[in-house]
Image 1 (spheres, rainbow, N blue to C red):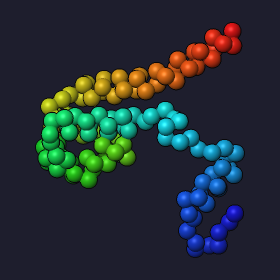
Image 2: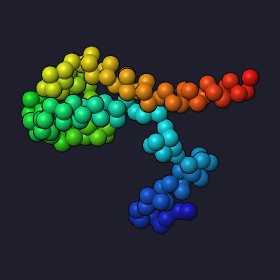
Image 3: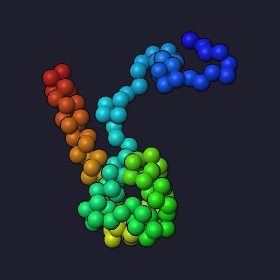
Length: 125
C-alpha cells in the first residue's frame, strides 16, 4: 500500500507497512521487557505522590520544567544522571536508591517470564 505523495500515513497504515517489512506484528507493551525509563518513571511518580508533592513543586526544586518531569514520569524521556540526581534530591532520595529501586522492579517484572522459561526447559528435558 503506497499512499499518494503528500498524504499522511495513518497509524493503521504504519502498522501494516511495518508488518509487511518485518513479517510480524510488533510486540505490545505488556508482551515485551519493560524499558528502564518506564520503570524509573513509575518509581519517580510513586515517590512524589507518596510524599504528597506536586509535579510543579518537585520540578521547581530540581530546576527542571514540569513538562519534562511529567515526560520522565510517563517513561517518555531518558534523563541524564545529573538530572536524576537533582530530581532525587528534590524527593529526598539518592541516585543509588533510585537505581536499586528500578533494578528491583525489573527483577520483579521479569521473574514470571524467567520461571516460565525454566519450566519449558525442564519439560523439554
